[in-house]
Amino acid sequence: MTYKTEQERFWAGEFGDEYLKRNQGARAIAANIAFFAKVLRRTQNIGSFIEFGANIGLNIAAFGSIMPQVKMSAIEINEKAVAQLKQFQDLTVYHSSILDFVPETRYDFVLIKGVLIHINPDELQGVYDKLYNSSQRYICIAEYYNPTPVEVPYRGHSGKLFKRDFAGEMLDKYPDLQLVDYGFMYHRDNNFPQDDITWFLLEKR
Image (cartoon, rainbow, N blue to C red):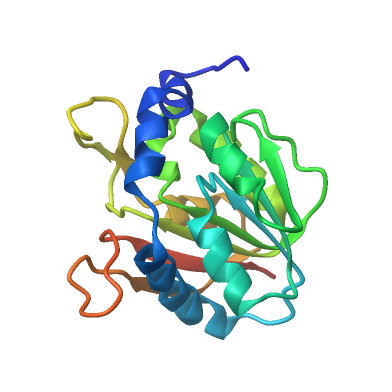
């Protein structure tokens, strides 16, 4: 696989391998179930789902436990994570960089969670197009939020984490997208702690 950006090589390689070792377990899945319980309360008639940057499938496992009837797909750049994703029954897995992914169909629910922050800012407009073109109805964006674009150090690395108003930029870019709901996950939550991520549920109208 060839890569357009340093960020892709970073996540496809050794750092991405170490990331999947750090982020796994039943507690993470439980926190994701609590997350989806909030997000999905404003949705209806979801029959298909795709996650951009699924890693080892912690969101897949949580979403599937709540919506077992949904046909599910995942995109993932890291080979070792893909191997674990392929252990899920009835999950369509695309071993691909998001930048290279070409949507073949549209999905009722498109998820990107903790991934846009790691994409080269010069490639964001193209990724927004892929999210939009993959969606039949809903897009859920869950990322570190900042009202203006800013880069922050990430585990001793520079050029690997960028915060901004991703959802706001998509709302500005596509006039038929509307904000349905939003919320915040807190790392000190008493029962279901996660990173301090703000999520936005968008819908095509």
